Image 1 (cartoon, helix red, strand yellow):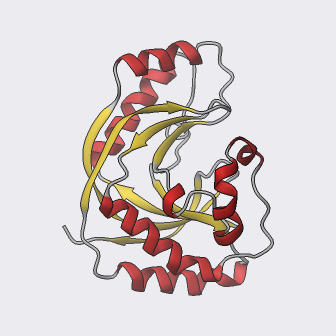
Image 2 (tube, rainbow, N blue to C red):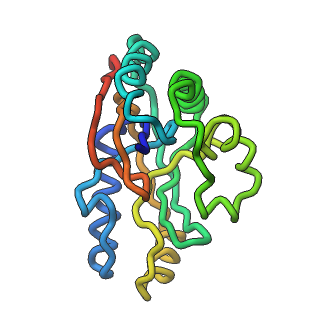
Length: 200
């Protein structure tokens, strides 16, 4: 099963996702947020055997037991080559450190028979990270974001992205905790397995 260990953003970040989702809805596009998926910033996502869940949860709980919330900034948007739409998350020292720690904590429990996703053909620099850690977006390849849309085909998509570039979305908030969830093929949480809140 695919499991994401993710940062839980504060209300101001969620509100920005909600607003952008409403704007997209008026243009005929339905975001993952509008479909009921939780707003999250992926720290480490890969596949695990079903038997690994208890060990994974215990290891992550130990890793974050003394965590404290820290600033999280959303600054602008990104349209990928395959028409995914992200809100960009600032790659702060604190967020990078948390992602690195979670990767090292969770990686020992992952499946070893994973194959690179098709989209990685566009990003060959990520292959070494995937081969070693089972995920392309770790350590120097860590790429924090909030996913709004995937493989969007709506004919108004390009115009909407152009508007976002003129008026970049921005919000200041915090990381409030770390969650673990089973995700679908688009990396969206379909079942929450655990959440660990950080001290203010």
